[in-house]
Image 1: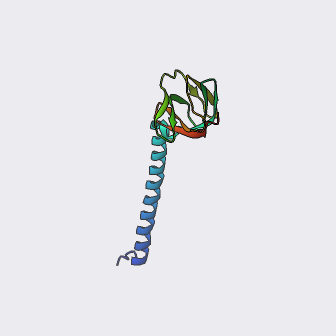
Image 2: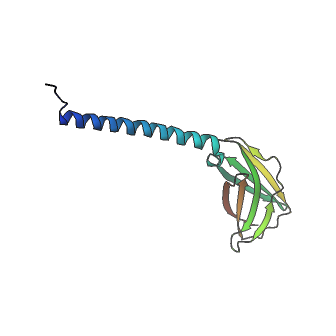
Image 3: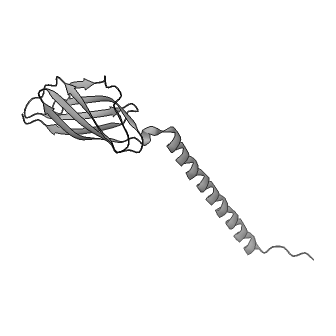
Amino acid sequence: MKKAVSPVIATLLLILIAVAAAVLVYVWVTGYAASITEARTPELRERIKIEAVSYKDRELTVYIRNIGDTKVTIDAIYVINAATGSSITVATDIQNLKASPGEVVSHVLEGVDLSPGETYIIKAVTVNGIEGATSFSYRG
């Protein structure tokens, strides 16, 4: 007479196979997701920050730091009046303003008229659409 596997051992084997399959699927999915994020979406790795703003003689200098882990190209810089929401200056003619990770770059906007006592927002945008912004008040 042949002996069969007991129901308890059969149940344990099925649970073991299911757990092993779940672990394999988890490892595959996390590895696949990481490779997609790494290879195909550099905009997820881009981050910029406006470090400082300097204004003198109608020239506004904007200092931008790359705080991401990939090289960025700045595409535009906007100066917005915070009270009204209107654009004071839009610089889209920026050429070759690139920053490596950790690097600070600057750009001078000429002919900018700021009013004393007003608050302004400076916004920088990369070619992938990532934004960095800060606000400041011009004291005159």
